[in-house]
Amino acid sequence: GSGDDWWRGAVVYQVYPRSFQDTDGDGIGDLRGVTRRLSHIASLGVDAIWLSPFFKSPQADMGYDVSDYCDVDPMFGTLADFDTMMAEAHRTGLKVIIDQVISHTSDRHPWFLESRSSRTNAKADWYVWADPKPDGTAPNNWLSIFGGPAWEWDGVRRQYYMHNFLTSQPDLNFHHPEVQEALLATVRFWLDRGVDGFRLDTVNYYFHDRLLRDNPPLVPDPDATSSDAPEVNPYGMQDHLYDKTQPENIAFLQRLRRLLDRYGGRATVGEVGDGARSLKTVAAYTSGGDKLHMCYTFDLLGPEFSARHIRRCVENFQAIVTDGWVCWAFSNHDVMRHVSRFSLREADRKRLAKLAISLLASLRGSICLYQGEELGLAEAELTYEELRDPYGIRFWPAFKGRDGCRTPMVWERDEANAGFSTGFPWLPVREEQRALAVDVQEGVAGSVLEHYRETLAFRRAHAALLDGDMAFLATNQDVLAFTREKNGERLLFVFNLTGEPQAVQLAVDMTVAEVLPIPGFAPVFADNTIRLAAYDVFCGRLGER
Ligand code: TEU
Image 1 (cartoon, rainbow, N blue to C red):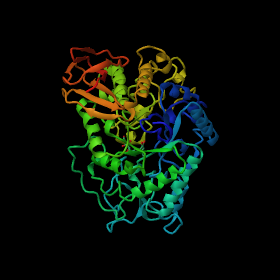
Image 2 (cartoon, protein in one colour):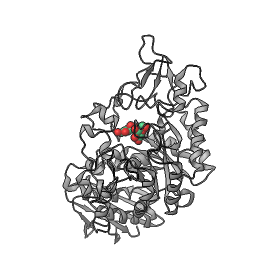
Image 3 (tube, rainbow, N blue to C red):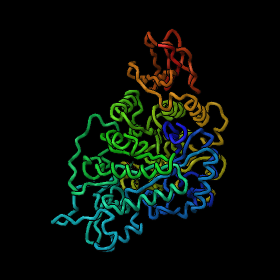
Image 4 (tube, rainbow, N blue to C red):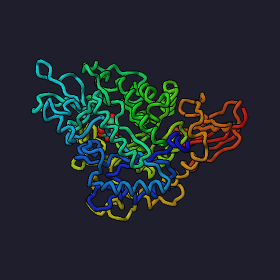
């Protein structure tokens, strides 16, 4: 899209500031570092950046625990650094979306310090406080994503407070009108500073059931497109009927939208990780044009990379979200890097990285890339001692946490810490990643980096790819074949997501008027048959029907 609609079909590049570029030698990336590396981001041909949190924070959850929504943490710089970064990004033609983590605050946020100080203070009900059950146990059976109950006892108030994540991330009480006002004021603060939009962390967790009813046990849904591993994460053992995705959220999202619309050209992308119900939530949150602009789901963040899975995700989406918009992603700062997730074979990684972006870029929706994927980085292996993610530290070794995708960006192979920092990096730089540094791949034909640039240019050149219709073709199970169509242009894509060659016979009523070469891939097309090598893709412009 263009103008106010720029977000529709946009390519967003996620920057995890801690690990992007350090400029002051403390081993942690900062906003000046983002500014310094904007030219790299712009060179990819993306529309926007999404900046993970850089707000004041004790960093218990690496910034997803905010203690001041309207200031920059000194480790990341100052508000002036932010303004410079914004101005430079806009000068380069990049929009800037920032993370809003408003479902919970840090337990050091002044609001929480006040709220916990007594049962009668002005902010006493700003968080979710509840008395124990008569036997002294927690108010109900709700669980925390990061392990254990969702309730923590506070010895001063002599009550429990609710937390969906760490005990140091108390949940705000969205039922309280003043909480909504205070949060909308922080949104206004950043809108006034010129941000182009927000990534709304855990947007379906804002409201909880006022009656605090127990969640029923989980009955696995056969249609679930994303799965938690219950043996690792106890959160998967409940059907989350009451601790999140409450109907009151609709009215709040409408208020938020009215605020954004007063500015114009600003967009929201809400993170909805709601398992089997996520698409219904996406439909509810993005329909009607009066709530969120788009939602980010976990559908493609699981381990499966197969024709069957991708088709099911897209078709489920099309069936349920008839009026709404999605942002697809294969990677982010919470999941194993996708080349490692999708294949155990090291030899496949480079080709897989290229195939995955070619696929992502041909989907209907907006797409989100995560820093380093444009280099084909695999998950970094870390020792227990090297871990910083509290989630990984708690569940090691069954779950190794999220640090393996959060290691520093690799810029220059031969510089200290591959150019990330002159100091001691907060997470290590692995040798095998150094070999994939930006300066190794830049300008090298056939590199993953150049493939990203060419692929994103291809997407921009074909309006059908942004918001054109998408329809699947009946074909061999192992092959993903679909058309994208807009204003008379009809493109056919055939993907082989397996490690075995495939031959696909086109239907008789289908003529390929022109083969559109996809950089890096050279399938053979003859006699209406497409011969695909392992991990291969074919693209053709179809003639008149
Ligand atoms: O993540 C929300 C979320 O649901 C995560 O728990 C996710 O399921 C998990 O990280 C997968 O391993 C958001 C942020 O993206 C995450 O970094 C934060 O830790 C979390 O919210 C709490 O703010």
